[in-house]
Length: 190
View 1: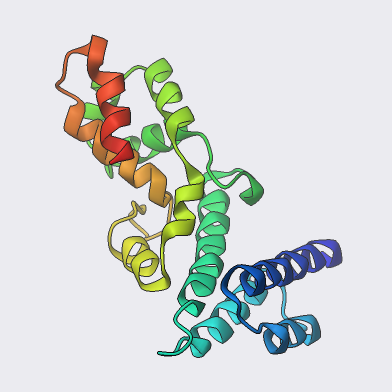
View 2: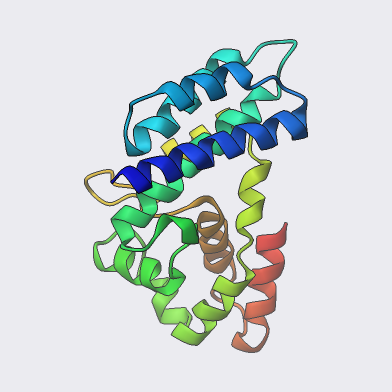
């Protein structure tokens, strides 16, 4: 447990140091608070998110991107826990997600009817997790709160890039199979 807490603290501090370098922000105070914190696991990330949100101001708007990184980390951890994979993978198996959410009635059966497992596995390779870093806090918060797929108990399963890929797949599902994959990838890129 101690090793896990230390690694979470270390990753939070590393994220703050990267934000300091990337956005020219002074994160020293928050780093000290995180280092001194006795909170466990995801509470450390929540604490860093709270501190970052409180720093957003007219003259320091880049704190919104720092807060978005901490929210994103929470989304990765939550989805990984609910889907049964390690959070450091960021994104789990896409086919398994679609199959699971279809089985409980969240997704329509059409996706699995129109796309084979091989096609879905191919589309998983086109997913670009680094695009998640383009969100500011409010954009990511609204996406997660209102649009990412959850089970009937509101447990998060879907992540941002998976949402965009599912939209592209749904839009292109009736296209000719020989050109559909490329059209899905093109729609996802837009």
